[in-house]
Length: 143
Ligand code: DQA
Image 1 (tube, rainbow, N blue to C red):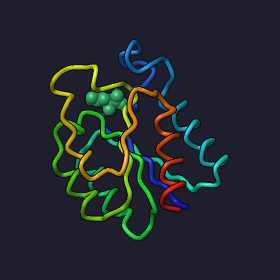
Image 2: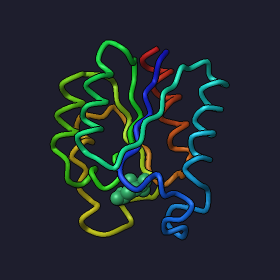
Image 3: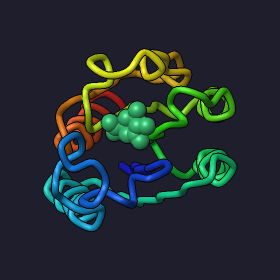
Image 4: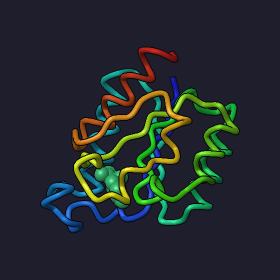
């Protein structure tokens, strides 16, 4: 099974970025965690991060016919991007939404997720573990 893990804007700043909310572990630590999970579970994984909405849309489109599932933390684009929603709908690849923090306990503007209506599952507030849960969910249901 091939899974694409996408991270949106500012997730490359993990470790530096608001550690009280996102923790002290770095983005490199996250990539290593995802790679280790993939090896343990027999999953082929590719990770991609961008601060640019269009680059994330391109990557989702390119996943068509290549990946069996997508795990995405769209960062702030969660709350603004119809384009990412439409991209996931367009390719019809089972997609899991992940957030490191529990967005339900945060500001009002974080209560909307456009992409959620195209996602098969959402994990939030679990830190890095949410990515692992997302990968396991896809493996269990779409392998
Ligand atoms: C986030 C939550 C978003 O609201 C925020 O804009 C992020 C990270 C999370 O992982 O908790 O960039 O997606």
